[in-house]
Length: 367
Image (cartoon, rainbow, N blue to C red; front, side):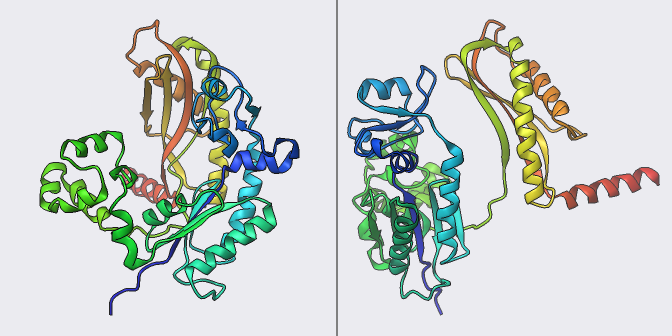
């Protein structure tokens, strides 16, 4: 018997941070709200739909947002409040299914192939979730329903804000055909340009090309592109994603030289270490093996340097010292100035595997 198609919902809160601010401060309703600190180095965290009409978008420099929309109301972000609302929304999700994969504070995938509520369809489940969000948080969410994750994500954007769009299995190929290839996951600006050189602009164009030709041109990724053009994606919803990296970073008001970064590295190491301790408490002592130093130059070039030492750091001071020492691996002129520094821990492994390795080598040395 063929496996029945999955039923996936992608829920995306509408202009989340800005909507929380407008909800909590009635004087902001109907106004172009930009969630960002003012200043030359600040970027936009979120923009209300009133601000988006002027071209203001997330991740845009705040100064550009101000030029585009001089009447915008700038509100500094309050992530404590946003996280509290996000937890509230996630609790609504888990009433319907345990298979919830958060992507950020404001969006998540849900696998509702089987639900806790017994609602008759994925569409009915999405409607119930959106209604509960509206009633309990006074915020709106858009949702996409489809047989897989990437289609559900595209669909959730289809009727924003406060919309619901459903792509049923028999509609998949027709739905995808007219879309620009840039809507497919993994197709960024560079790949889009390479496909354009082959005369491929839409998913239908991509689908018309033999998969062997795509594979010859792009390797295994070419075959994956063909699968995506047909709406094939078997990636499951993963409810618990293991942490890949814990980090803290800071952008300076004024660019600094490499030899001026130590106090900032030490301060960020304290933050990273505190996050690491929380991660270990929540996930049975998982251990990070690699220390990462991240730098961004004044001309926006990003550098990372990492080290996996034989002896893992056991304190924020040790973490800070290793991160400071990693500066010696930066081979740029001493006059180079940096606008950002970050300290991270990565390479997580289970504590049991580390202990087993320690026991093995310990017994070997004794013998």
